[in-house]
Image 1: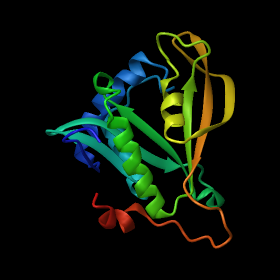
Image 2: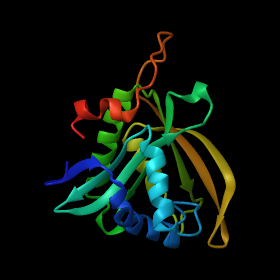
Image 3: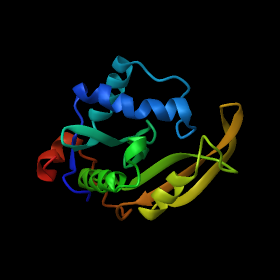
Length: 194
């Protein structure tokens, strides 16, 4: 882990700092297919919705938030309860320094403690790569053990061009028949020291 980096749970008051990290991804990249930067209150409400059940983590050094990662429901139907979608954003000026890896390692630890079995990542994909989208996220997820499972062609329109979207997945545990209910994050948070 990067020196002096703290991984902690996000708080509502972090919304402004997290939004500052997210905004350039909306405005300057096709990493997210969102067109408009959300208002701070909307962003905070999104955070709170996630935090009702799942971890929402930030990476911080010397009081500065450098990135964040979280899990959200993969699908609303009950049978998908052991699956989540993972998301990560690191300050564009601070990427490739181990922050993303530190966040994802702690996120996986938390999700495993909850009883989550499947991690799914929805990733914008350029073919060919361009100034708005490199395929670094695919490489990042592959490095962390995710495998490619699907590709939707030309499904996202942004910056006057079409982009693909890929799904990658990682299994955290066995898929036996002795299935335990998934715990809420607040039930496992203390044991994780988050």
